[in-house]
Length: 243
Length: 387
Image 1 (cartoon, each protein chain N blue to C red):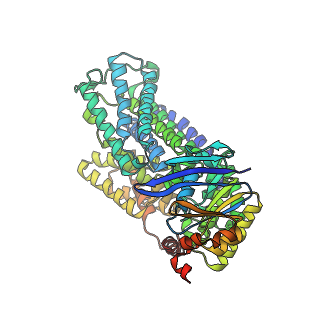
Image 2 (image 1 turned 135 degrees about the horizontal axis):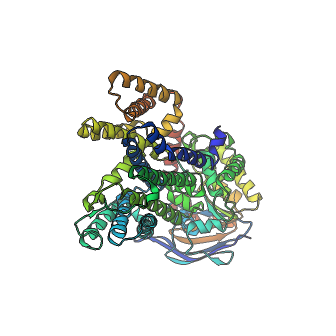
Image 3 (image 1 turned 30 degrees about the horizontal axis):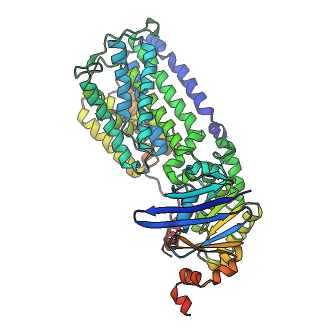
C-alpha cells in the first residue's frame, strides 16, 4: 500500500514562498491530478516530496515512516519515483544504459549486466526497444519523455510522480501517453500527475488537488473541483471568469 | 570476442597476465645485455600510469575536476621521507601507510566539500588546488616534516630481496601501476562506476534514481587518494632529494590531467595510453635537447585533442583500428628514413606518433551522430518550458 502524507510543507527560495504550508495526501490506487497555474508550486512540491529539495518546514511520511529529512536516493528506495518535466537523460549513455541505472540501485539492486538485460523490458513497455543502443541525441521530445518514464518505472516504484509528461506533445502522442498512464496505473502503481491540459487531467484523475501561489485552494472530485469559482479564477485566469 | 571483452573479469585477467610477463622483463634485459635505462624508462611510464589512472578514477568517472593529485602524491612521498628516513620505520609497511594517510586526506576533503551542493564545479577544483598549497606550507613550517630543508632520500634502506635498484624500482612501479589499473577496471564495470558516470552526467537525477551520490563520491575520492599516495611513496625511492617546491607544485596534477584527457577519461585504458604517449614523446624530445619544444608540442597536441577528439585517443583508436595500425607502420617507416634509431624507445616514439596521427586524420562524415533529430527536440523543450 502506498500512502504518502504531507503536512504544512514550506519551501522558500530567497524571499519567494514557493510552497506556503501545503497539506495533503495520496493513497494507494489513486491517480491524483496536481494542477495550478504556472509558478503555483506544483514542480516544487514534487521536488520536495521526492527528496530532491529539503523542505524548510513541515512533515512528510510514506507508509507511516517519516521521510522529511531523507536523501532522495533513500526515498526512491522506499518506492517513490519521479520524472522530470524537462527530460534530463544521462547524455553520454545510450537509452538502454539510462534505464539500467535505476535497476542497479534501490531496494533490490542488480549487477550491471543483469540490470542491462532487465532494462530492455522497460524500454519495451514504453515502446523504445528500437532505440536501446542509440545515443540520447537521436531521440525526439516524445521519446525522451518516454525514456523518463521508463527510467522511473525501472526503479519499481509503488508511487510515481509524472511531471508534465504530456506537455509539448502533439494530439496523437497525447492520446498514446494517456493510454500509457492508464497501463501504469493498471499495473498497481499509484500516480500523481501534474498537467496543464484540463481535458487530460479530468479524464485520468480520480481526485484533483489545485495549487495556487504555494497553497492548496481545492482538493476533491475532478468534476466538482474544476467548477469551483476560485479554481476557475486561479487556474484559467480572470478572462475565463468574464466569458 | 566483443561479448568476452564485456565480461567484468576479462580486462583484469588480461592485465594480470601482461603484468606477470613484464615481471621477468628485467631478467630478459639482463640476459640480452640491454641498457638499464629501459627499466627506468618503463618505471616512469608505470609511475604516470598509476598517477593518471588514479586521477581518472575519481575525476574522469565522476566529472568532479580535481587538482588535488599533487597533494595526494606529496603525502606519499613525504610519508617515506619522514617515517623511513627520519623515524626509521621499515620501508614496505610505510608504502601502505603513505597510501592510507593520503586516503584520509581525500576523505577529509570530501567530507567538507561534498556536503555542500554549491561546491560543485569550479569551486571544487579550486578547493583541491588550495589543499596542495596548504599542505606545502604546513610541511615548510613544521620541522618534524620538512622545515624548509628538504629530506635526502638516497640513503633509504631497501630490503635486499628486491634486487638491484633499477630492478626493484621497476617491479614496485609495475605492482603499483597494475593495482591502479585493475582497480579502475573493476570500478568501471561495477555499480560504483555506473553511479559515478551518472553523477557526471546529472548528479541530481542520479540521486533521485537511487544512486547514493555522497557515498560514491567519497569512496571514489578515497580510492584515488590511496592509489596516488601509494605511488608517491614508491616514487620516493626514485628521487634522491625531496623538497616542498618539487612535490607540492602544479606539475603532477597538470601532467595527470594532460595524460588522462589525451587518452580519454571515459575508459580505464585512456590514462594508460595517455601516460605512455606523453612520457615517450617528452623523453625523446628531451633527449634530443628539445625541452622547450617538448612542452609546446605536447600542449599543442592537447589543444588539438580537446577540439577534435573529445572522446580521447583510446576510444578513437578503437573506433579506427585500420587508420591507427597503418599510422603506426608508417611511423616506423618514417623512423627509418628520418632516424636516428639509436634506441628501442625511439622506435616506440615513432610507432606511437604514427598511430596517434593515423587515428586523428579527419575522415569523411560516416553517418556519425545525427544532429537534426536532436535540434527539434531542444526547440520543443524550450517551447514547453516557455508555455
